[in-house]
Image 1 (cartoon, rainbow, N blue to C red):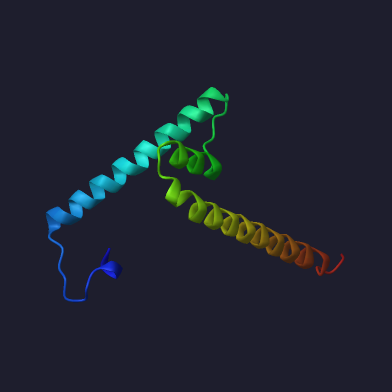
Image 2 (cartoon, one colour):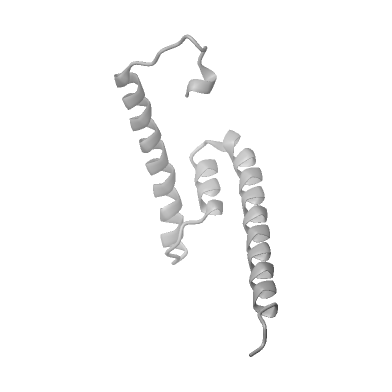
Length: 99
């Protein structure tokens, strides 16, 4: 919140609490819709694609493209991290001296 306000701006404690409540309600609203989709498809796990679907279904379609881009970058990064970890584990096990 501080990034979008001027440097000399102050936000009262009750203002911060109000924003927090709104954010929590928004997350609950989106997650509830995504969860409903999962129940209809007999799935137990809500994933990022479900969240994006719910945002679109609830009229927050302006956010769907940026969220899809972020999700793809996140998944690519996680895949890369797993590959690096696997390579490091393989390297350390192959470089161990034989007994």
